[in-house]
Image 1 (cartoon, rainbow, N blue to C red):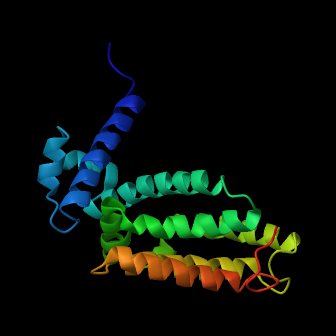
Image 2 (tube, one colour; image 1 turned 30 degrees about the vertical axis):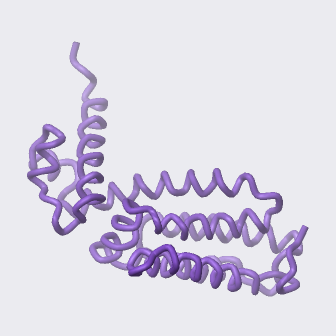
Length: 202
């Protein structure tokens, strides 16, 4: 019995993404051979071009998959926070700390920006900013952050800062030490949004 065409297409895409993800994560985007990772998936270069256009299109698909996994992990960690403010802080810092993980470090924060440009312009960026702006607006309504704050502007600034923070860790000679400094500085920046700077709200 033949599989439905839609199912076959999904399987082919999944195989190519998995093979490319492994190659990009281990040897890096530049060194990854399209012929090697398509062969490892039992497919041809033609299949890659058909489904993703080119190697860059495949990188975008890999990044979208990893980004979705990162978002789920961030939400899982943040859901355990005791307050809305701590949830917001945990969401931001958990994302940054993921730059310590080899696969994420290389694909998301080193090769991604080098090949695809400014992460603020990536397809997922607007959704991330919108979610962050909603969180800030809720905190503002609850009297946690300053009333004069424009949530969308602040969200864009924080999103840009977290991206730069992650890239700094990923490109550091000592990622562990850099991560500690970056996260500490980032938390200090966030505390500047509080209605009473330096205090931890209930």
